[in-house]
Structure formats: C-alpha cells, structure tokens
Image 1 (cartoon, rainbow, N blue to C red):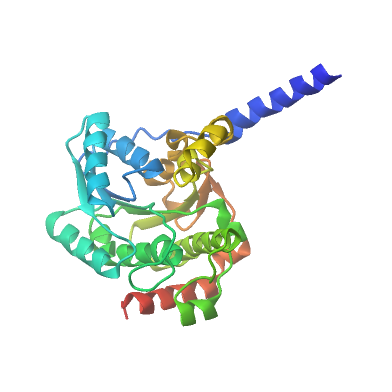
Image 2: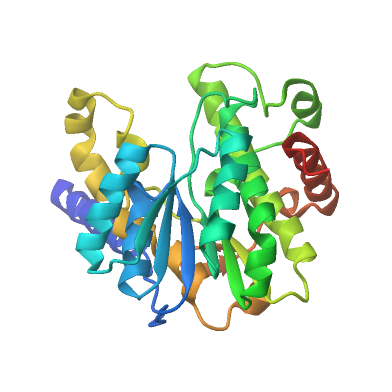
Length: 314
C-alpha cells in the first residue's frame, strides 16, 4: 500500500512539474531587427532573461535599471549571451519621479524608435517622493513612464506595452482613502501587511492595463498584463544563505527558473495576432479571464486619475 501511494505521489509531482512549473513556451519566431525595446528591472531575474531573448532576436534593447554598476554588468553579460552589441544601459529609478522624467527625456532625445515597452521592475520600501514603494515602483513609476513614452509608441505603431503583474492581484484591494491621505496602498511593515500591499500593487497593474487599453483604442498600440508564474529569483533574493540552501531542492522542483518565468512576457511582446486581445490578462502563454475587481471600469478610471495627479501629469 505504501509503495503504491508513493508511486502515485511521485507521478502527481512529475505531472505538476512538467505542466504547471515548466509551463508553455513562447512559440513566436518573430525577429526584431530595427526595433527598440525597453525592459525595466532587466539587470536580474526574468527581466534579464527577457532582455537576452529579445537581443538574440535582433532588437535594440534598453536596460532601464536603478543601479548603474549592476545595470552595466548586466549589459556586458547580455551582450555576451546574445551575441548582440545592440544592448544599452540607461539609468532609471522608478522610485523617483525626477529620475523617470529624466530617463524619458534622455531616451526620447537619443532613440528614434520605441516598439515594445516591458514594465517589469518591482521593489519594496518607500520612494523619495514619499509614496509607498510598492505602489510607487510597481504601479506609479510605470504609469508615469508609460505616459511619457506613449507618443513615441504611437509613432512606431503597431507597438506593444507589457505590464508584468501576478496572480497575487486576485487577493488585492485598493483603499482609495489611504492612497489619497498617505500616498500608499496600505500602512504597516509586518510580513502579512507587506504581502497584502504587494497584492494590492499587482491589482493596480491589472486596473492600469484595463484603463490603458480603453485609452489606446484606434491607435495600433496594444497592452497586455500577465502572471509570469512563481519563479526562483523572486524568493531567493532577500533570504539568508542557510535558508537558500535548505529551500534549494523545493524551489528547484516547484518554482520556475527565469527562462520558464519569462515565457509569458515574451508571448505578450511577440505573439502574432493577439492585437484583438489588448487589455487582457495572460498566464502560461494563454489568455485568462480576470475577476470583476480587476476589470472594474470605475476603479480603473479612479486609479488613473489619482495616478495622474500624484505624478503631476495634470
């Protein structure tokens, strides 16, 4: 009896690993010669792996990262891995409205094209402008960046905007009173509070994408949001060495590596024929339905208007 149960358990684990963890791969053979892509937070994790794939396809890839030293090191590594010299580092701190405006100004002066914008970066803490960092970086920074670059994306249409969210958005909620009074999605620094605020910021990504798609109708600029899957770099970055060693067998088996984790981003950026699905949510390279709260027209419009005000766009 025990052997049978063990065999069944191993079989289930094997199926889980091959179907859920490994997941589908982006099948697009698209070449990107002559096209320019920005990937935020591309010095590490799935952002970096996404940048390598796009560089291999011939794109000019702008690595928009906060840390100059790590960004330049990633640039050298991505150039080596991809065999492309068309990989450029440009400093961007999404936790600073001034840095975002400066980045956009430099980019628009120096780069004639923008074909794909991948809003990938994420952080925790507080921004220099006094916003809760998960709201400031995960949503507001990308909101401002996207708005500052929209005209260039329209000029280069057909073009795409990819907003990396997470299935965690399902557990999110938006406290507009807290946003208005504290410039944050929530207060408190306990693990549970931070986890909730992370989920809230991912709901912001989905609502931003929903409203953005409406505003882009008729422009040939399309936008998509996605869940990349649970992947290793997310978990291991801030844990101690001992815990990393203990967790290694678990994370290796149950979590995606960065190559597996970037497939849905690549699918949304490259897959031919998904333009009619602008505004939709993808997971495992497949379009999925969102809960009503992530496509709430009134909440999406309200979040957009508050974001405009907080960014100084109005």
